[in-house]
Length: 394
Ligand code: FSX
Ligand code: SF4
Ligand code: F3S
Image (cartoon, rainbow, N blue to C red; front, side):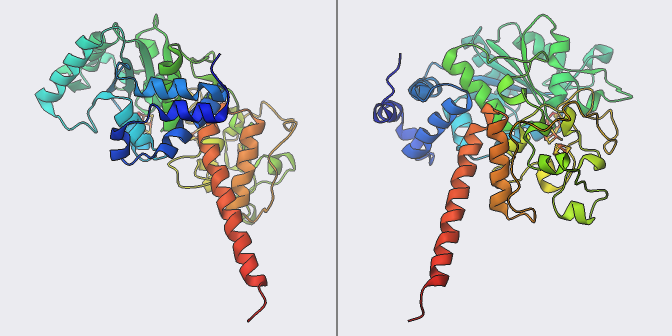
């Protein structure tokens, strides 16, 4: 059993900190925070932080090969737009991505040669991430890279992969390209390879933290996280959005926005009547948010109904503003409080955090840690401002 003394744990993590990380702008503290938040977010004890540190820095760690097919590249973009916990450095530099067209310096023949070398060297070991749907009609001629179809690229890469990850709704089930009339016969990875275990991370776009956590889990424990019946990690897709939403108390109290721009909408009331699909959609968006731009950076948080982008039966199929079926009409035992309905950022953020914890959205811990820190900082600032105000004039 790993040691649990916090100081010991910290020292063991720091032992894996490298000068290269420092050069890339990752501080010891960032690294420590990353490893401990990761352990928490993956429901591992704190004492697993050194194992995470070891796994992500091990020079023999399996690389990531990332293939793009029919997509809009937002899955990659969402990864690049996130910088906590220094995701860019840790994923792209610490965890080696040997092939990803969008970001690699090499192009053309050089890029293909790099991929082939990595596939050979890491056969049976590499993590294959597939972004975008796979065209299957007419022998897959609708998407060709380096003269080969997507199907041919997969034939070369799937059989020897250590783990298969479908990132985004397109790779999970076909996404937008598969919606009617589906001219290319667009399919998801698991449909093309029904015999393989594919980890689906749907979302259009998906959340990069869920990818990061999946990869770190795999590297640390050398096994896949627990998956739902749709092959999605339970830590991220185990709970309905409606269970964690900061607007849930409005739903339970019958306070709905009836139209965009009406007073209910302006006051942050529930978006159910505008077509929110949160009651049928499994994802951890309320707790994680997107792109590190602060609290409420998710669709409902910005005032737009969830359109169920991670659900095959809803996204691109059910009209965006059609009312959803509510499967859990009873309020959760404990739901997020609404501190200030008029929406001081700090309080709305606090509500989302509570929602996240209540819903046991373990995958959200990394971002929750950040949000808690943001809230503390803001509260500290407000306290200071108050003290300044209260100071007797000299
Ligand atoms: Fe699909 Fe990725 Fe939607 Fe785009 O590239 S999941 S179209 S937002 O982002 O594949
Ligand atoms: Fe939140 Fe949508 Fe549920 Fe309303 S219907 S509580 S906005 S998830
Ligand atoms: Fe998608 Fe709904 Fe989240 S639209 S990003 S699952 S809030």
